[in-house]
Amino acid sequence: MSRLAQGLVLLLLGGAVLRISAFTTEYLNYVKPGFRPFLIAAGAVVFALGVITLVQEWRRPQDTGREPSRWTEAADGRGGHAGGRPDGREDGHAGEHGGGHAAGPTGGHAGGYGDGHGHDHSRGPRVAWLMCLPVCAIFLVAPPALGSFAAARDDVAPPPPPREVAEGYEPLRGDGPIAMPIGEFVGRAWGDAKRSLAGKQVRLTGFVVRSKQPDVWYVARMQLNCCAADAFALKVAVRGAPAPPENTWVEVTGVWIPPRSDKLPLGTVPPRIRAINVTKVPRPVEPYE
Amino acid sequence: MSDKALLDWPAETDDPVPPASWGRRSPAAPLLPWVFAGLVVALVAGRALLAPYLTAPALQTWSTIFVAICVQALPFLVLGVLLSAAITALVPPSFWTRALPRRPYAAVPVAGAAGAVLPGCECASVPVASGLMARGVTPAAALAFLLASPAINPVVLVATAVAFPGRPEMVVARFAASLVVAVLAGWLWLRFGRAEWLRVPRASAERGWRAFVAAMRHDLLHAGGFLVVGGIAAATLNVLVPRSWLAAVAEIGWLSVLVLALLAVVLSICSEADAFVAASLTAFSPTAKLAFLVVGPMVDLKLIALQAGTFGRSFAARFVPLTLTLAIGVSAVTGWVLL
Figure 1 (cartoon, each protein chain N blue to C red):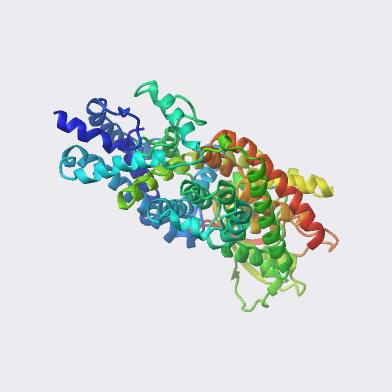
Figure 2 (cartoon, chains in turn brown, red):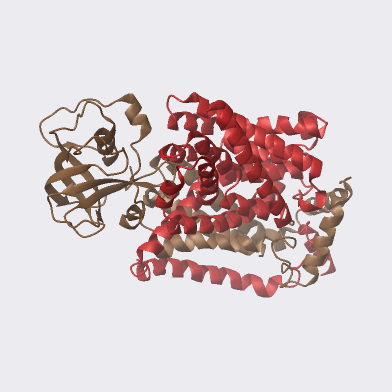
Protein backbone atom coordinates (compact mmCIF):
# COMPACT_ATOMS: atom_id res chain seq x y z
CA MET A 1 0.00 0.00 0.00
CA SER A 2 1.70 3.16 -1.12
CA ARG A 3 1.64 6.29 0.95
CA LEU A 4 -0.68 7.91 -1.56
CA ALA A 5 -3.17 5.06 -1.13
CA GLN A 6 -2.85 5.36 2.65
CA GLY A 7 -3.75 9.02 2.49
CA LEU A 8 -6.69 8.37 0.22
CA VAL A 9 -8.08 5.54 2.40
CA LEU A 10 -7.84 7.79 5.46
CA LEU A 11 -9.56 10.56 3.52
CA LEU A 12 -12.39 8.21 2.52
CA LEU A 13 -12.89 6.90 6.05
CA GLY A 14 -12.72 10.33 7.66
CA GLY A 15 -15.09 11.72 5.07
CA ALA A 16 -17.60 8.91 5.60
CA VAL A 17 -17.54 9.33 9.39
CA LEU A 18 -17.94 13.11 9.08
CA ARG A 19 -20.79 12.57 6.66
CA ILE A 20 -22.79 10.40 9.04
CA SER A 21 -22.01 12.45 12.14
CA ALA A 22 -21.44 16.12 11.26
CA PHE A 23 -23.61 16.60 8.18
CA THR A 24 -26.48 14.15 8.66
CA THR A 25 -28.11 12.37 11.59
CA GLU A 26 -27.37 8.92 10.20
CA TYR A 27 -25.08 8.19 13.14
CA LEU A 28 -28.22 7.82 15.26
CA ASN A 29 -28.83 4.50 13.47
CA TYR A 30 -25.64 3.13 15.00
CA VAL A 31 -24.80 4.81 18.31
CA LYS A 32 -26.29 6.88 21.12
CA PRO A 33 -26.94 10.60 20.49
CA GLY A 34 -24.35 11.68 23.06
CA PHE A 35 -21.63 10.07 20.95
CA ARG A 36 -21.79 12.71 18.22
CA PRO A 37 -18.94 15.02 19.39
CA PHE A 38 -16.56 12.08 19.68
CA LEU A 39 -17.47 10.86 16.21
CA ILE A 40 -16.99 14.30 14.70
CA ALA A 41 -13.63 14.66 16.45
CA ALA A 42 -12.48 11.21 15.33
CA GLY A 43 -13.66 11.79 11.76
CA ALA A 44 -11.90 15.14 11.66
CA VAL A 45 -8.64 13.65 12.97
CA VAL A 46 -8.72 10.82 10.41
CA PHE A 47 -9.60 13.23 7.60
CA ALA A 48 -6.84 15.65 8.63
CA LEU A 49 -4.35 12.78 8.79
CA GLY A 50 -5.32 11.86 5.24
CA VAL A 51 -4.87 15.46 4.08
CA ILE A 52 -1.47 15.75 5.81
CA THR A 53 -0.35 12.48 4.23
CA LEU A 54 -1.40 13.63 0.78
CA VAL A 55 0.28 17.02 1.21
CA GLN A 56 3.49 15.36 2.38
CA GLU A 57 3.33 13.00 -0.57
CA TRP A 58 2.58 15.82 -2.97
CA ARG A 59 5.48 17.94 -1.78
CA ARG A 60 7.98 15.14 -1.44
CA PRO A 61 9.55 15.22 -4.91
CA GLN A 62 9.79 19.01 -4.94
CA ASP A 63 11.02 19.86 -1.47
CA THR A 64 13.69 17.24 -1.02
CA GLY A 65 16.22 19.91 -1.85
CA ARG A 66 14.76 22.39 0.58
CA GLU A 67 14.99 20.35 3.74
CA PRO A 68 18.10 18.27 3.51
CA SER A 69 18.77 18.39 7.24
CA ARG A 70 15.66 16.37 8.00
CA TRP A 71 16.61 13.56 5.69
CA THR A 72 20.07 13.44 7.13
CA GLU A 73 18.64 13.31 10.62
CA ALA A 74 16.30 10.53 9.59
CA ALA A 75 19.11 8.52 8.09
CA ASP A 76 21.13 8.95 11.26
CA GLY A 77 18.19 7.84 13.33
CA ARG A 78 17.91 4.69 11.32
CA GLY A 79 21.47 3.78 11.97
CA GLY A 80 21.22 4.59 15.65
CA HIS A 81 18.10 2.54 16.04
CA ALA A 82 19.45 -0.55 14.42
CA GLY A 83 22.28 -0.61 16.88
CA GLY A 84 20.26 0.52 19.83
CA ARG A 85 18.53 -2.68 20.91
CA PRO A 86 20.53 -4.81 23.26
CA ASP A 87 18.10 -7.70 23.42
CA GLY A 88 18.87 -9.14 20.03
CA ARG A 89 15.32 -8.80 18.78
CA GLU A 90 16.41 -6.52 16.03
CA ASP A 91 17.95 -9.43 14.19
CA GLY A 92 14.60 -11.05 13.72
CA HIS A 93 13.22 -7.87 12.34
CA ALA A 94 16.00 -7.37 9.93
CA GLY A 95 15.46 -10.87 8.64
CA GLU A 96 11.78 -10.34 8.18
CA HIS A 97 12.30 -7.13 6.37
CA GLY A 98 14.82 -8.56 4.05
CA GLY A 99 12.62 -11.53 3.27
CA GLY A 100 9.48 -9.50 2.98
CA HIS A 101 10.82 -7.07 0.48
CA ALA A 102 13.12 -9.26 -1.50
CA ALA A 103 10.25 -10.41 -3.66
CA GLY A 104 10.10 -7.02 -5.26
CA PRO A 105 7.70 -4.14 -5.32
CA THR A 106 4.51 -6.08 -5.94
CA GLY A 107 5.14 -9.21 -3.93
CA GLY A 108 6.84 -7.49 -1.05
CA HIS A 109 4.08 -8.20 1.43
CA ALA A 110 3.26 -11.66 0.26
CA GLY A 111 4.54 -13.10 3.53
CA GLY A 112 1.11 -12.73 5.08
CA TYR A 113 -0.09 -11.18 8.29
CA GLY A 114 2.20 -13.11 10.55
CA ASP A 115 5.59 -11.88 9.62
CA GLY A 116 5.87 -9.94 6.43
CA HIS A 117 4.24 -6.64 7.23
CA GLY A 118 3.51 -4.01 9.73
CA HIS A 119 6.97 -2.90 10.72
CA ASP A 120 7.75 -0.10 8.41
CA HIS A 121 5.96 3.16 8.59
CA SER A 122 6.08 4.37 5.03
CA ARG A 123 4.48 1.38 3.31
CA GLY A 124 1.17 0.72 4.98
CA PRO A 125 -0.18 -2.72 5.81
CA ARG A 126 -2.41 -4.33 3.23
CA VAL A 127 -5.07 -5.06 5.83
CA ALA A 128 -5.77 -1.33 5.83
CA TRP A 129 -7.60 -1.72 2.52
CA LEU A 130 -10.36 -3.32 4.60
CA MET A 131 -11.11 0.09 6.02
CA CYS A 132 -12.85 0.80 2.72
CA LEU A 133 -15.45 -1.82 3.68
CA PRO A 134 -17.37 0.20 6.29
CA VAL A 135 -17.20 3.15 3.92
CA CYS A 136 -18.79 1.06 1.17
CA ALA A 137 -21.39 -0.25 3.62
CA ILE A 138 -22.25 3.28 4.74
CA PHE A 139 -22.65 4.54 1.20
CA LEU A 140 -23.99 1.55 -0.73
CA VAL A 141 -26.18 -0.32 1.76
CA ALA A 142 -27.00 2.80 3.78
CA PRO A 143 -27.73 0.57 6.80
CA PRO A 144 -31.02 1.63 8.42
CA ALA A 145 -31.78 1.51 12.11
CA LEU A 146 -32.39 -1.99 13.44
CA GLY A 147 -35.99 -2.94 12.78
CA SER A 148 -38.37 -5.84 12.96
CA PHE A 149 -35.84 -8.40 11.72
CA ALA A 150 -33.57 -7.74 14.68
CA ALA A 151 -36.48 -7.38 17.11
CA ALA A 152 -38.01 -10.69 16.04
CA ARG A 153 -34.71 -12.48 16.71
CA ASP A 154 -34.99 -11.91 20.44
CA ASP A 155 -37.65 -14.42 21.42
CA VAL A 156 -36.92 -13.91 25.07
CA ALA A 157 -38.24 -10.54 26.13
CA PRO A 158 -35.63 -8.60 28.09
CA PRO A 159 -36.20 -7.80 31.73
CA PRO A 160 -37.22 -4.32 32.84
CA PRO A 161 -34.41 -1.78 32.93
CA PRO A 162 -33.05 -2.15 36.47
CA ARG A 163 -32.19 1.49 37.20
CA GLU A 164 -35.72 2.79 36.69
CA VAL A 165 -37.27 0.11 38.86
CA ALA A 166 -34.88 0.89 41.67
CA GLU A 167 -35.90 4.54 41.75
CA GLY A 168 -39.60 3.72 41.60
CA TYR A 169 -42.19 5.27 39.33
CA GLU A 170 -44.11 8.50 39.74
CA PRO A 171 -47.86 8.10 39.65
CA LEU A 172 -49.31 9.02 36.24
CA ARG A 173 -51.37 12.21 36.13
CA GLY A 174 -53.55 13.87 33.50
CA ASP A 175 -56.63 12.84 31.58
CA GLY A 176 -55.57 12.51 27.96
CA PRO A 177 -53.31 9.80 26.60
CA ILE A 178 -49.87 10.00 28.19
CA ALA A 179 -46.99 9.59 25.77
CA MET A 180 -44.25 7.40 27.20
CA PRO A 181 -41.26 5.43 25.92
CA ILE A 182 -41.89 1.73 25.46
CA GLY A 183 -39.14 1.01 27.97
CA GLU A 184 -41.04 2.94 30.63
CA PHE A 185 -44.26 1.13 29.77
CA VAL A 186 -42.53 -2.24 30.09
CA GLY A 187 -40.92 -1.18 33.35
CA ARG A 188 -44.21 0.05 34.84
CA ALA A 189 -46.07 -3.03 33.66
CA TRP A 190 -43.51 -5.39 35.19
CA GLY A 191 -41.81 -3.62 38.01
CA ASP A 192 -44.34 -1.29 39.59
CA ALA A 193 -45.98 -2.61 42.72
CA LYS A 194 -48.42 0.33 42.74
CA ARG A 195 -49.80 -0.63 39.31
CA SER A 196 -49.67 2.98 38.14
CA LEU A 197 -50.64 1.97 34.59
CA ALA A 198 -54.01 0.54 35.51
CA GLY A 199 -56.82 2.27 33.63
CA LYS A 200 -54.60 5.01 32.15
CA GLN A 201 -54.55 5.81 28.44
CA VAL A 202 -51.01 5.83 27.14
CA ARG A 203 -49.45 6.48 23.77
CA LEU A 204 -46.51 4.39 22.54
CA THR A 205 -44.37 5.01 19.45
CA GLY A 206 -42.53 2.17 17.78
CA PHE A 207 -42.32 -0.08 14.77
CA VAL A 208 -44.51 -3.06 13.95
CA VAL A 209 -43.29 -6.61 14.53
CA ARG A 210 -45.49 -9.54 13.53
CA SER A 211 -46.29 -12.26 16.01
CA LYS A 212 -46.98 -15.94 15.51
CA GLN A 213 -50.37 -15.56 17.15
CA PRO A 214 -53.07 -14.39 14.72
CA ASP A 215 -54.76 -11.51 16.54
CA VAL A 216 -51.70 -10.02 18.24
CA TRP A 217 -48.83 -7.95 16.96
CA TYR A 218 -46.05 -6.07 18.68
CA VAL A 219 -45.13 -2.44 18.81
CA ALA A 220 -41.39 -2.47 19.45
CA ARG A 221 -38.44 -0.23 19.96
CA MET A 222 -34.78 -1.19 20.19
CA GLN A 223 -32.83 -0.02 23.23
CA LEU A 224 -29.14 0.79 22.99
CA ASN A 225 -26.56 0.89 25.73
CA CYS A 226 -23.64 1.90 23.57
CA CYS A 227 -24.04 0.91 19.94
CA ALA A 228 -26.34 -1.15 17.75
CA ALA A 229 -24.35 -4.31 18.49
CA ASP A 230 -25.76 -4.43 22.02
CA ALA A 231 -29.31 -3.44 21.08
CA PHE A 232 -32.20 -5.44 22.44
CA ALA A 233 -35.89 -5.22 21.65
CA LEU A 234 -38.54 -3.80 23.96
CA LYS A 235 -41.87 -5.19 22.83
CA VAL A 236 -45.47 -4.57 23.80
CA ALA A 237 -48.18 -6.91 22.51
CA VAL A 238 -51.04 -5.01 20.88
CA ARG A 239 -54.57 -6.40 20.87
CA GLY A 240 -57.75 -5.09 19.37
CA ALA A 241 -56.42 -3.60 16.15
CA PRO A 242 -55.47 -5.09 12.79
CA ALA A 243 -51.74 -5.36 12.24
CA PRO A 244 -50.18 -2.69 10.03
CA PRO A 245 -47.49 -3.80 7.57
CA GLU A 246 -44.29 -5.03 9.17
CA ASN A 247 -41.73 -2.39 10.12
CA THR A 248 -44.03 0.65 9.74
CA TRP A 249 -43.74 3.22 12.49
CA VAL A 250 -46.96 3.65 14.41
CA GLU A 251 -48.38 5.47 17.39
CA VAL A 252 -50.53 3.17 19.50
CA THR A 253 -52.99 4.74 21.92
CA GLY A 254 -54.46 2.26 24.35
CA VAL A 255 -54.87 0.90 27.84
CA TRP A 256 -52.66 -1.63 29.63
CA ILE A 257 -54.12 -5.12 30.04
CA PRO A 258 -52.93 -6.40 33.42
CA PRO A 259 -51.63 -9.97 33.34
CA ARG A 260 -54.14 -12.63 34.28
CA SER A 261 -52.02 -14.06 37.02
CA ASP A 262 -49.05 -12.76 38.94
CA LYS A 263 -47.39 -16.12 38.84
CA LEU A 264 -45.74 -15.74 35.45
CA PRO A 265 -42.09 -14.88 36.00
CA LEU A 266 -41.16 -11.38 34.90
CA GLY A 267 -39.57 -11.05 31.52
CA THR A 268 -41.07 -14.11 29.89
CA VAL A 269 -44.13 -12.53 28.28
CA PRO A 270 -44.26 -8.98 26.87
CA PRO A 271 -46.83 -6.71 28.55
CA ARG A 272 -50.05 -6.17 26.64
CA ILE A 273 -52.02 -3.14 25.57
CA ARG A 274 -55.59 -2.90 24.22
CA ALA A 275 -55.42 -0.51 21.29
CA ILE A 276 -57.95 2.29 20.97
CA ASN A 277 -56.29 4.00 18.07
CA VAL A 278 -53.36 3.17 15.79
CA THR A 279 -51.91 5.83 13.48
CA LYS A 280 -48.97 5.73 11.13
CA VAL A 281 -46.21 8.19 11.93
CA PRO A 282 -42.96 9.07 10.18
CA ARG A 283 -39.84 7.39 11.51
CA PRO A 284 -38.45 9.44 14.40
CA VAL A 285 -35.02 11.01 13.97
CA GLU A 286 -33.79 9.08 16.99
CA PRO A 287 -34.86 5.52 16.23
CA TYR A 288 -33.66 3.94 19.50
CA GLU A 289 -34.59 4.41 23.12
CA MET B 1 20.09 13.46 -11.39
CA SER B 2 22.39 11.57 -9.09
CA ASP B 3 21.87 14.30 -6.53
CA LYS B 4 18.11 13.81 -6.62
CA ALA B 5 18.37 10.05 -6.35
CA LEU B 6 20.65 10.37 -3.37
CA LEU B 7 18.17 12.61 -1.60
CA ASP B 8 15.17 10.62 -2.58
CA TRP B 9 15.71 7.28 -0.97
CA PRO B 10 16.55 8.13 2.63
CA ALA B 11 13.15 9.81 2.83
CA GLU B 12 11.65 6.37 3.30
CA THR B 13 13.65 5.79 6.41
CA ASP B 14 12.19 2.45 7.31
CA ASP B 15 12.50 0.73 3.99
CA PRO B 16 15.33 -1.46 2.89
CA VAL B 17 17.58 -0.27 0.15
CA PRO B 18 16.29 0.35 -2.41
CA PRO B 19 12.76 1.10 -1.26
CA ALA B 20 10.08 -0.96 -2.90
CA SER B 21 8.35 2.09 -4.30
CA TRP B 22 11.53 3.37 -5.89
CA GLY B 23 11.25 3.48 -9.61
CA ARG B 24 7.58 2.54 -9.40
CA ARG B 25 6.34 5.88 -8.26
CA SER B 26 6.11 7.53 -11.62
CA PRO B 27 3.78 5.05 -13.35
CA ALA B 28 1.68 4.20 -10.27
CA ALA B 29 1.24 7.60 -8.72
CA PRO B 30 -0.81 9.40 -11.37
CA LEU B 31 -3.25 6.51 -11.78
CA LEU B 32 -4.24 5.98 -8.17
CA PRO B 33 -5.92 9.35 -7.52
CA TRP B 34 -8.15 8.79 -10.53
CA VAL B 35 -9.11 5.33 -9.27
CA PHE B 36 -10.09 6.89 -5.97
CA ALA B 37 -11.94 9.74 -7.63
CA GLY B 38 -13.87 7.12 -9.59
CA LEU B 39 -14.54 5.23 -6.38
CA VAL B 40 -15.94 8.32 -4.68
CA VAL B 41 -18.23 8.99 -7.66
CA ALA B 42 -19.28 5.32 -7.64
CA LEU B 43 -20.04 5.50 -3.92
CA VAL B 44 -22.14 8.63 -4.22
CA ALA B 45 -23.94 7.39 -7.32
CA GLY B 46 -24.19 3.87 -5.92
CA ARG B 47 -26.15 5.13 -2.96
CA ALA B 48 -28.87 6.40 -5.26
CA LEU B 49 -28.72 3.42 -7.60
CA LEU B 50 -27.95 0.44 -5.36
CA ALA B 51 -29.26 1.23 -1.89
CA PRO B 52 -32.95 0.81 -2.86
CA TYR B 53 -32.18 -2.76 -3.99
CA LEU B 54 -29.93 -3.87 -1.11
CA THR B 55 -32.83 -4.27 1.28
CA ALA B 56 -32.68 -7.91 2.38
CA PRO B 57 -33.40 -7.65 6.14
CA ALA B 58 -30.54 -9.95 7.11
CA LEU B 59 -28.06 -7.93 5.03
CA GLN B 60 -29.32 -4.66 6.44
CA THR B 61 -29.21 -5.90 10.01
CA TRP B 62 -25.72 -7.29 9.48
CA SER B 63 -24.42 -4.08 7.97
CA THR B 64 -26.04 -1.94 10.66
CA ILE B 65 -24.30 -3.94 13.38
CA PHE B 66 -21.04 -4.05 11.44
CA VAL B 67 -21.02 -0.28 10.82
CA ALA B 68 -22.10 0.32 14.43
CA ILE B 69 -19.15 -1.67 15.80
CA CYS B 70 -16.70 0.16 13.54
CA VAL B 71 -18.20 3.61 14.14
CA GLN B 72 -18.44 3.11 17.88
CA ALA B 73 -14.87 1.87 18.19
CA LEU B 74 -13.28 4.51 15.94
CA PRO B 75 -13.15 7.40 18.46
CA PHE B 76 -11.52 5.12 21.04
CA LEU B 77 -9.11 3.80 18.44
CA VAL B 78 -8.20 7.34 17.40
CA LEU B 79 -7.65 8.30 21.05
CA GLY B 80 -5.46 5.25 21.58
CA VAL B 81 -3.49 5.92 18.41
CA LEU B 82 -2.98 9.58 19.38
CA LEU B 83 -1.65 8.55 22.80
CA SER B 84 0.49 5.82 21.30
CA ALA B 85 1.98 8.18 18.72
CA ALA B 86 2.63 10.71 21.47
CA ILE B 87 4.37 8.00 23.53
CA THR B 88 6.60 6.92 20.67
CA ALA B 89 7.30 10.28 19.08
CA LEU B 90 7.09 12.92 21.80
CA VAL B 91 7.93 11.30 25.16
CA PRO B 92 11.65 10.63 25.59
CA PRO B 93 12.44 6.93 26.01
CA SER B 94 14.24 7.57 29.28
CA PHE B 95 10.93 8.58 30.87
CA TRP B 96 9.64 5.01 30.89
CA THR B 97 12.74 3.53 32.44
CA ARG B 98 12.44 6.07 35.24
CA ALA B 99 8.65 5.77 35.67
CA LEU B 100 8.49 1.99 36.00
CA PRO B 101 10.35 -0.16 38.51
CA ARG B 102 13.57 -1.54 37.10
CA ARG B 103 12.82 -5.15 38.04
CA PRO B 104 10.36 -6.67 35.54
CA TYR B 105 8.43 -8.62 38.18
CA ALA B 106 7.73 -5.37 40.03
CA ALA B 107 6.98 -3.46 36.83
CA VAL B 108 4.10 -5.77 35.87
CA PRO B 109 1.70 -4.89 38.73
CA VAL B 110 2.64 -1.21 38.54
CA ALA B 111 1.85 -1.12 34.82
CA GLY B 112 -1.38 -3.05 35.42
CA ALA B 113 -2.52 -0.59 38.06
CA ALA B 114 -1.51 2.29 35.78
CA GLY B 115 -4.15 1.01 33.38
CA ALA B 116 -6.68 2.77 35.57
CA VAL B 117 -5.70 6.14 34.11
CA LEU B 118 -6.55 5.46 30.46
CA PRO B 119 -10.23 6.24 30.06
CA GLY B 120 -11.50 4.21 27.18
CA CYS B 121 -12.25 0.77 25.94
CA GLU B 122 -10.11 -2.06 24.69
CA CYS B 123 -9.56 -0.59 21.23
CA ALA B 124 -7.55 2.25 22.74
CA SER B 125 -5.34 0.04 24.87
CA VAL B 126 -3.83 -2.08 22.07
CA PRO B 127 -2.05 0.76 20.26
CA VAL B 128 -0.98 2.31 23.57
CA ALA B 129 0.54 -0.98 24.75
CA SER B 130 2.25 -1.33 21.40
CA GLY B 131 3.66 2.18 21.76
CA LEU B 132 4.92 1.38 25.26
CA MET B 133 6.70 -1.73 23.99
CA ALA B 134 8.18 0.21 21.12
CA ARG B 135 9.61 2.61 23.69
CA GLY B 136 11.37 -0.17 25.55
CA VAL B 137 8.88 -0.97 28.32
CA THR B 138 9.13 -4.65 29.30
CA PRO B 139 6.59 -6.49 27.08
CA ALA B 140 5.07 -8.29 30.09
CA ALA B 141 4.41 -4.95 31.82
CA ALA B 142 2.88 -3.49 28.66
CA LEU B 143 0.68 -6.59 28.38
CA ALA B 144 -0.52 -6.18 31.96
CA PHE B 145 -1.44 -2.60 31.07
CA LEU B 146 -3.18 -3.83 27.91
CA LEU B 147 -5.37 -6.26 29.86
CA ALA B 148 -6.10 -4.09 32.87
CA SER B 149 -6.83 -0.67 31.41
CA PRO B 150 -10.10 -1.42 29.55
CA ALA B 151 -11.61 -3.05 32.65
CA ILE B 152 -10.48 -0.95 35.59
CA ASN B 153 -10.58 2.64 34.35
CA PRO B 154 -13.00 5.03 36.09
CA VAL B 155 -15.40 5.36 33.15
CA VAL B 156 -15.96 1.60 32.99
CA LEU B 157 -16.25 1.25 36.77
CA VAL B 158 -18.86 4.03 36.95
CA ALA B 159 -20.79 2.39 34.10
CA THR B 160 -20.69 -0.89 36.04
CA ALA B 161 -21.96 0.81 39.20
CA VAL B 162 -24.83 2.37 37.22
CA ALA B 163 -25.74 -0.93 35.60
CA PHE B 164 -25.81 -2.79 38.93
CA PRO B 165 -27.52 -0.34 41.28
CA GLY B 166 -27.22 -1.22 44.93
CA ARG B 167 -24.58 -3.86 44.27
CA PRO B 168 -21.19 -2.20 44.81
CA GLU B 169 -19.64 -5.62 45.35
CA MET B 170 -19.98 -6.18 41.59
CA VAL B 171 -17.74 -3.15 40.92
CA VAL B 172 -15.22 -4.34 43.52
CA ALA B 173 -15.26 -7.87 42.11
CA ARG B 174 -14.77 -6.62 38.56
CA PHE B 175 -11.88 -4.37 39.55
CA ALA B 176 -10.15 -7.02 41.63
CA ALA B 177 -10.62 -9.92 39.22
CA SER B 178 -9.50 -7.89 36.18
CA LEU B 179 -6.39 -6.58 37.90
CA VAL B 180 -5.47 -10.04 39.19
CA VAL B 181 -5.87 -11.58 35.73
CA ALA B 182 -3.78 -8.82 34.15
CA VAL B 183 -0.94 -9.19 36.67
CA LEU B 184 -0.99 -13.00 36.54
CA ALA B 185 -0.94 -12.97 32.74
CA GLY B 186 1.96 -10.50 32.80
CA TRP B 187 3.96 -12.62 35.23
CA LEU B 188 3.27 -15.83 33.34
CA TRP B 189 4.38 -14.16 30.12
CA LEU B 190 7.50 -12.91 31.86
CA ARG B 191 8.28 -16.39 33.16
CA PHE B 192 7.34 -18.56 30.16
CA GLY B 193 7.02 -16.19 27.21
CA ARG B 194 9.68 -16.20 24.55
CA ALA B 195 10.89 -13.13 22.73
CA GLU B 196 10.40 -14.62 19.28
CA TRP B 197 6.66 -15.18 19.87
CA LEU B 198 6.04 -11.50 20.33
CA ARG B 199 6.55 -9.05 17.51
CA VAL B 200 7.61 -5.92 19.31
CA PRO B 201 6.54 -2.99 17.19
CA ARG B 202 9.44 -0.95 16.03
CA ALA B 203 9.53 2.73 16.71
CA SER B 204 11.35 4.99 14.37
CA ALA B 205 14.16 6.70 16.19
CA GLU B 206 12.97 9.91 14.62
CA ARG B 207 11.24 12.29 16.97
CA GLY B 208 9.00 15.30 16.60
CA TRP B 209 5.97 16.26 14.57
CA ARG B 210 6.79 14.35 11.42
CA ALA B 211 7.41 11.10 13.30
CA PHE B 212 4.20 11.70 15.24
CA VAL B 213 2.20 11.85 12.00
CA ALA B 214 3.98 8.80 10.58
CA ALA B 215 3.44 6.72 13.73
CA MET B 216 -0.18 7.76 13.96
CA ARG B 217 -0.91 6.97 10.33
CA HIS B 218 0.74 3.60 10.57
CA ASP B 219 -1.02 2.57 13.80
CA LEU B 220 -4.38 3.82 12.65
CA LEU B 221 -4.27 2.02 9.29
CA HIS B 222 -3.04 -1.13 10.91
CA ALA B 223 -5.34 -1.30 13.90
CA GLY B 224 -8.25 0.02 11.82
CA GLY B 225 -7.89 -2.77 9.30
CA PHE B 226 -7.95 -5.42 12.01
CA LEU B 227 -10.80 -3.70 13.76
CA VAL B 228 -12.78 -4.22 10.57
CA VAL B 229 -11.87 -7.92 10.58
CA GLY B 230 -13.16 -8.23 14.14
CA GLY B 231 -16.26 -6.21 13.29
CA ILE B 232 -17.12 -8.57 10.45
CA ALA B 233 -16.82 -11.63 12.71
CA ALA B 234 -18.74 -10.08 15.59
CA ALA B 235 -21.57 -8.80 13.38
CA THR B 236 -21.91 -12.17 11.65
CA LEU B 237 -22.17 -14.10 14.91
CA ASN B 238 -24.44 -11.44 16.36
CA VAL B 239 -26.91 -12.01 13.52
CA LEU B 240 -26.55 -15.80 13.36
CA VAL B 241 -26.62 -16.87 17.01
CA PRO B 242 -30.12 -16.59 18.49
CA ARG B 243 -30.12 -15.23 22.02
CA SER B 244 -32.85 -17.68 23.06
CA TRP B 245 -30.17 -20.39 23.23
CA LEU B 246 -28.85 -18.65 26.30
CA ALA B 247 -31.94 -19.19 28.41
CA ALA B 248 -31.53 -22.95 28.12
CA VAL B 249 -28.11 -23.08 29.78
CA ALA B 250 -28.60 -20.41 32.45
CA GLU B 251 -29.69 -22.98 35.02
CA ILE B 252 -26.48 -25.01 35.13
CA GLY B 253 -23.91 -23.27 37.35
CA TRP B 254 -20.53 -24.07 35.85
CA LEU B 255 -21.86 -24.16 32.31
CA SER B 256 -23.45 -20.73 32.66
CA VAL B 257 -20.05 -19.24 33.59
CA LEU B 258 -18.47 -20.77 30.50
CA VAL B 259 -21.34 -19.74 28.25
CA LEU B 260 -21.32 -16.10 29.35
CA ALA B 261 -17.53 -16.00 29.02
CA LEU B 262 -17.82 -17.26 25.44
CA LEU B 263 -20.69 -14.87 24.78
CA ALA B 264 -18.44 -11.99 25.84
CA VAL B 265 -15.83 -13.19 23.33
CA VAL B 266 -18.38 -13.45 20.53
CA LEU B 267 -20.35 -10.25 21.07
CA SER B 268 -17.26 -7.98 21.26
CA ILE B 269 -19.14 -5.32 23.17
CA CYS B 270 -17.22 -2.23 24.14
CA SER B 271 -16.14 -2.44 27.78
CA GLU B 272 -17.99 0.77 28.58
CA ALA B 273 -21.30 -0.83 27.63
CA ASP B 274 -20.89 -4.47 28.58
CA ALA B 275 -22.07 -3.95 32.17
CA PHE B 276 -25.53 -2.98 30.90
CA VAL B 277 -25.70 -6.09 28.76
CA ALA B 278 -24.53 -8.23 31.67
CA ALA B 279 -27.17 -6.68 33.92
CA SER B 280 -29.86 -7.56 31.40
CA LEU B 281 -28.93 -11.27 31.51
CA THR B 282 -31.01 -11.77 34.66
CA ALA B 283 -31.34 -15.51 34.31
CA PHE B 284 -27.64 -16.00 35.03
CA SER B 285 -25.82 -16.13 38.36
CA PRO B 286 -23.71 -13.14 39.52
CA THR B 287 -20.55 -15.20 39.02
CA ALA B 288 -21.46 -15.84 35.39
CA LYS B 289 -22.08 -12.11 34.91
CA LEU B 290 -18.73 -11.37 36.50
CA ALA B 291 -17.06 -13.76 34.04
CA PHE B 292 -18.78 -11.84 31.23
CA LEU B 293 -17.42 -8.55 32.58
CA VAL B 294 -13.87 -9.83 33.13
CA VAL B 295 -13.49 -11.76 29.88
CA GLY B 296 -15.10 -9.16 27.58
CA PRO B 297 -12.49 -6.39 27.88
CA MET B 298 -9.58 -8.87 27.68
CA VAL B 299 -10.62 -11.34 25.00
CA ASP B 300 -13.10 -10.72 22.23
CA LEU B 301 -13.19 -11.17 18.48
CA LYS B 302 -12.18 -7.66 17.52
CA LEU B 303 -9.48 -7.64 20.20
CA ILE B 304 -8.07 -10.97 18.95
CA ALA B 305 -7.88 -9.51 15.45
CA LEU B 306 -6.24 -6.34 16.76
CA GLN B 307 -3.70 -8.27 18.84
CA ALA B 308 -2.87 -10.66 16.03
CA GLY B 309 -2.34 -7.70 13.74
CA THR B 310 -0.29 -5.64 16.16
CA PHE B 311 1.84 -8.26 17.93
CA GLY B 312 1.78 -11.14 15.44
CA ARG B 313 -0.25 -14.30 15.10
CA SER B 314 2.12 -16.50 17.07
CA PHE B 315 1.66 -14.13 19.99
CA ALA B 316 -2.13 -14.11 19.78
CA ALA B 317 -2.30 -17.90 19.46
CA ARG B 318 -0.63 -18.22 22.89
CA PHE B 319 -1.73 -15.11 24.71
CA VAL B 320 -5.45 -15.32 23.95
CA PRO B 321 -5.99 -18.86 25.39
CA LEU B 322 -3.81 -17.95 28.40
CA THR B 323 -5.86 -14.82 29.12
CA LEU B 324 -9.18 -16.57 28.54
CA THR B 325 -8.34 -19.42 30.92
CA LEU B 326 -7.04 -17.05 33.59
CA ALA B 327 -10.04 -14.75 33.24
CA ILE B 328 -12.58 -17.56 33.59
CA GLY B 329 -10.72 -19.15 36.50
CA VAL B 330 -10.13 -15.93 38.42
CA SER B 331 -13.70 -14.70 37.97
CA ALA B 332 -15.06 -18.05 39.17
CA VAL B 333 -12.94 -17.80 42.33
CA THR B 334 -13.69 -14.10 42.85
CA GLY B 335 -17.39 -14.69 42.34
CA TRP B 336 -17.30 -17.52 44.86
CA VAL B 337 -15.54 -15.33 47.44
CA LEU B 338 -17.18 -11.94 46.90
CA LEU B 339 -20.60 -12.41 45.32
